[in-house]
Image (tube, rainbow, N blue to C red; front, side, top):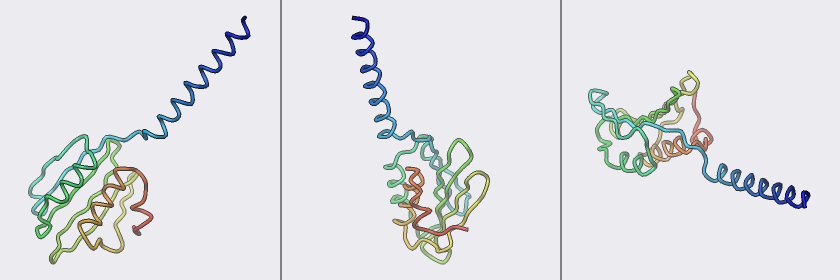
Length: 137
């Protein structure tokens, strides 16, 4: 009888262990990020959210008049951040990020607001795709 109970306990622990691992991999822990917009060459500051979602990123980027100068910044609690900004006129567009105290600027400027949005979403998701698709120095 004792062996049977031990076997049941072992099976239960394995099931719980596998279930927890599945949840961890499927529900990647998402760091809380703040989304802020600076407008008019940083004269105006607006915090969009201190607990950002992908939809907020998309809506914010679509809602800005990119013929005027704006910067959209995603920042984490640990001091890392990414900024996309500029305008579609004379200033052009750019991307810059800070990671572990080091700052990096994109080599080839983004060609569109959609590209900047994609970069922000990649940073938000933590997939590193923005680094693979763009060169930074």
